[in-house]
Image (cartoon, rainbow, N blue to C red; front, side):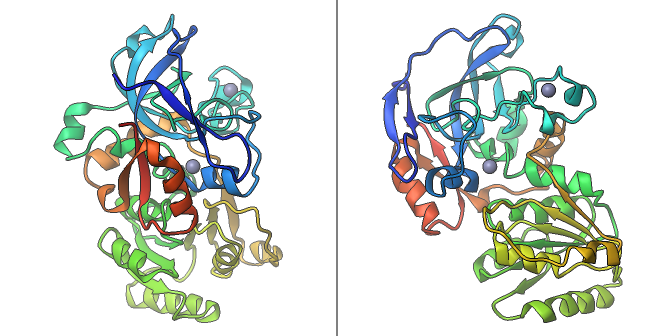
Length: 355
Ligand SMILES: [Zn+2]
Ligand SMILES: [Zn+2]
């Protein structure tokens, strides 16, 4: 067995430190998961480098995109023993008023690994059993995927999935995805799987080329098209493709102030703007454009566990490709990996795999 350990964040900007882990029996309703893989998210970098506060005070083990196998199950959670699972990035309590009304993402008692509780940059993690998503290993193997690969479903795929469902994306619609990094690539593929025609916008030509092969019908490099012309160019594409010039659905996935301003600038009559990316930066907007265009702006904090099986199905059915957009790295190289992601040296989403 791997020597149980986890990597702890002790202070902003400092390298994580490895500490040994004692494998206790989980309390009632909880399970101990042997981590297969844990994706590295922009949010982890926000905690580590930008001083975004974790809900649980430091030291804390980060990481909220976890797949693995249930190694020990506490009382009441025995049915999960031995199962391959995805751990949702947001785990609602299931019992409060918000949860009972199906609004688990705003549950005040929710647990987010790597934020409210210790996360998945570890060999093992203890999490609530409620909300776990079972992974069918026969289908996983048939899809040519390892359990570690689907870790990124637990945020990078499900968060845009929730956004796409919430925005009501369907056949015949024009969807614009602004920013096709670790999350936007999946927004493109999910919207295309729902039958929409997807326009992808980014500053990185390699990323645009990747999504052109996976769901994007048209791409725009905003290094070559300025913000003013972008809306006109997308309008011309819509016209040429017989798509509506109104009611576009715009997903802001860049998580940058410039990207947010650009996405807001794409509002047309009846548009929906879904804010998926996160930044601490502020942006100046004429908010009244929402009123003038009878448009709406939406946000979503993660994804309710109820939607995880459907999002995972898209992956297992081959409608959402993961492998071109991820790379596995040894967990114990975590400090180098985080620095490389921070310095934008990795083009794919890193998945940390305990050796
Ligand atoms: Zn995340
Ligand atoms: Zn709740």
